[in-house]
Image 1: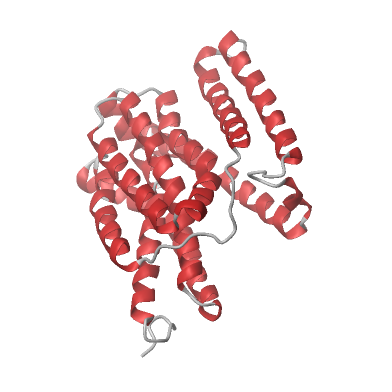
Image 2: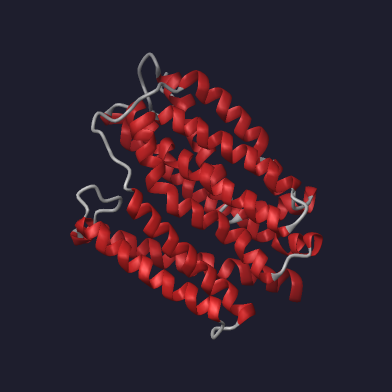
Length: 299
């Protein structure tokens, strides 16, 4: 009997792999939105400033986004299962650290570590599905995977509010621990190791320039609210960000082993898709923090 439309002698094994990848993906995506609802409580309990709250969100997203491409390359080179399990372990342990944090600084540090784990595990969820399912079943599997991603983002605020109300802000992070442990155990037993037949090289200059540019830009924009736009450190951060990001574009344009080949943007579908994704993310993530604070702290 087909399971989720998948057939064959190993249909059950493939479905188990699919569900495991979806649960792991849901954890990483939920942490993009679910934490926002807990921010007012975190602010009161940890005496966190508004800048701290922004870093609690952006520390995760910034590291996640900066290392995502690198995580995919590491999986292709050293083993997709190995990198997925490594990322899942880091994410789970970092979630435990987040829940045990006694200050805003500790929470920010563990959130950044969560971002490292998410950047390693998320590319693995897709690449593992690609090698697990044959071409005729791959579209269905990836469609379910993508649906879970969107559903996790949408459910984040509602689920976060319910979790905080039932168990406190720490529970938002602690709930990842049993899910992560179960997903690790199941993936260890069911996922087969695979590597890319094509050798991919790490673009270290591109990684340093891109990550450094994003970090200094984010630092300048967040800390400018407290320090002021004319503060020397803020001006230096924004100028450094501009230099690094321009350097990143130049390097990626010239490098034969670019981390993000700029020629892809000549493809209309690629450019349009990224423009839509950027617009959605800008509108969604930029309003989450302030609407949450307004609805819970002011109203």
